[in-house]
Length: 394
Length: 77
Image 1 (cartoon, rainbow over the protein chains, first blue to last red):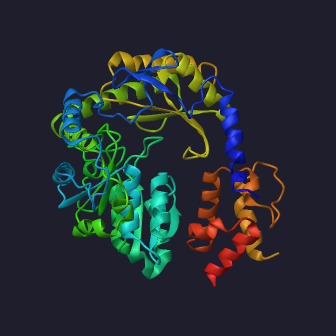
Image 2 (cartoon, one colour):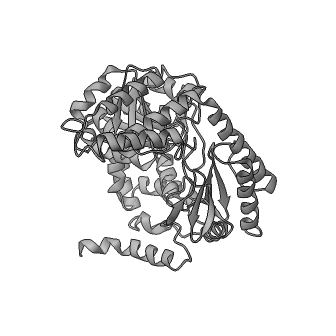
Image 3 (tube, each protein chain N blue to C red):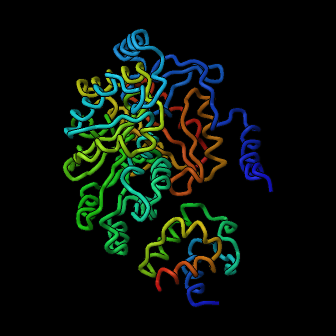
């Protein structure tokens, strides 16, 4: 048995996908024309499958900040925060994030994935326990694995299911980290954080909320679900990313606990990774400032989300129970979903094809995501394309 | 055949296609054609039935109903 034999299944999948006119998992974006428009497969295509919720990727002040930092500070830091990669911009962004959330401190990581790895592996270790939502993102699973703690799962968005499992752990419940998300990225659903916080408090467990998709999207000031539901004081750690609403790449953790500052000495994914480039930090700071000062973007995003959701409902599409900037349309099977996805590309709309095992409930879906930068005409064009692409399919 | 294996087989039945044959204790669960989410839901049912919590490492080594039965019996001991 060779090490390469394990790739047989992946090779089979790759060959099947390569037979299709366009491989849905490896779409090449030839040219990006704006936050919502790109050139794909030779034609102008509306982007309805990104995570560019605030639409800041081409914002002049972000581009200017990045350009200035690039010229002034160079292309990269070439090292870790603990060695030679700790620039004033990194620390300024940490102060601004802490201030944004109203917490005492923040830590910047090089990716959102790394933020989850670094936070979970710093918090939990061998002999501890981690409870994961059944639909938790891969980065939460991987962070849990890296920690060495025993990993358990509970039913998606079900605080009672968590409560039962923490009770079964007995005294170990007080050394348990519970990890959930503020907005689940495929279907756009979210938990009742007050229920989860209550269960965690009851058992002495620590609650981490990954607000990767809810930063900028939820809460009066765009802080996420914890703000939206008024439980900022009950959540222990919030993890997030710069790669969605902030239009860059990187991640962070903020907390009301001062132990966070000690992660710098213990979190291997923080210590052993090069720090984000100066231009990335600069565009992120500019984007965070936009989220803080332009609440109208969140209003536009939600107007767009409700408009598309209502259009899908009117078409009879199988969508989730509530409007959200992420809207998944369920298809009757994988073949239908693949065909709908290709038809949408032909119609000039890029979406995300979600099939098992990536889908949360084993079904096949078309994931659409909205941006504050989508025009009403673009939203209507997405709806019209979906109507055409799904005709006779479901 | 242990009582635990029989109980696990009963808990598994709702996740199988209608009319599926009874699952042999030594048949790999991975070969049953279930989606990963269905396997997770099955495990949740097992945990609730026995009032236990099964960690993912233990599950990773439970390839068959017989293996899972051994895990359940260890956790209940």
